[in-house]
Length: 194
Image (cartoon, rainbow, N blue to C red):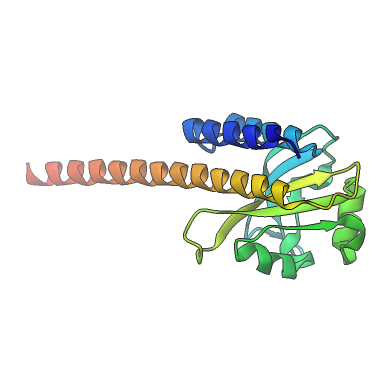
């Protein structure tokens, strides 16, 4: 792995600090790090309680890719197909696997997307024990990649930067809502006293 990947994750982190968890900033951050690591896709999924018959789906929120984006990428049925992975991610740990070693229907799903190796890293918005918001997914469609520690460090850094940007955006939204609620209450109070 090159120094370029460390430089690009630093650049991506700076971009996310400046612009937040907005679409263009996140997509650019995914591209910077994805290209530096030589992956084919970098995707962000949000945990969801939305379902379709018998499945809980994580919808795709942001994506970058040098490989084609098949329609199957729009949702990722992780919770139903790989509950052991959910447990690892919920503890704040990344995980990776060769697609051919993934059991069951998730293997079929990944192979249909052309994935040879997949890595998932959690995105958290709260404390360590808080529920995790979603996850970063990196796909290698060319080779069966075994992710070395240096690459895992870059990916963990990107996940933390995404987590921080999302947390800041959520705080800004909450503060804006609080200000709006206070304005409404002050207007009600002002009308009631006249």
